[in-house]
Image 1 (cartoon, rainbow, N blue to C red):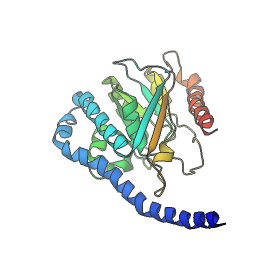
Image 2 (cartoon, rainbow, N blue to C red):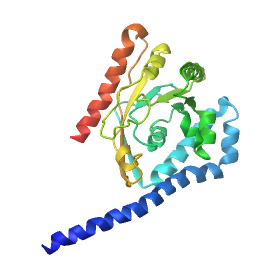
Image 3 (tube, rainbow, N blue to C red):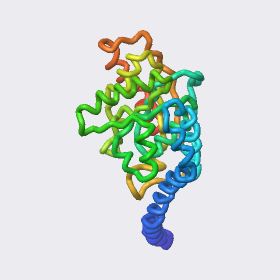
Length: 260
């Protein structure tokens, strides 16, 4: 009886501590995002003046991502079904549940790529300045934005840079949803340009650093890169939908198996 009562007293204390510590943990995340950028600001500015130096910027971005991941107490573990070939551009797609998805994707690929991401992230102080200079921004409220995104992506692919898209189109509003439906964009671009597609499953980002303010914790952060899918023989009219759903099925089954 005494032990039960002790537990009942202890749980509110833990809850109270979480409400105090989690805001500090979130602040620490933004400090880890911003301080390295401030320190390296002159270098980053030079590397983003021209798209020809993007491969050097990408190397610095990977260091920045590692600082955040390890600084937050996350321990990344990446399993690869197939290695990426050097000097090859890829279409990378992954499930989207956390701001740390950006950092994990940078750690996963040594091959330079640019993100296609929502315009709202450009409003984040310091980070947003370089985000809008290096990424392809999507304005969901502007119907013309879709065409502009495709035009910009085509240009970057011509420059020999890969593309990373979270095909759910954002973080699912329902936190219990394992994986939302996929949009067409990534698969259309991959087929149009004969770009090999790399599906990626991010297992723990939602648990470690979700958008729910008072949830999250340090710990293992796993990812898996699945077998690379060639697209040279695919046709937009006949294969796009099948291709999109088959890739979604790969990631969904992996997430469901991990939950079990």
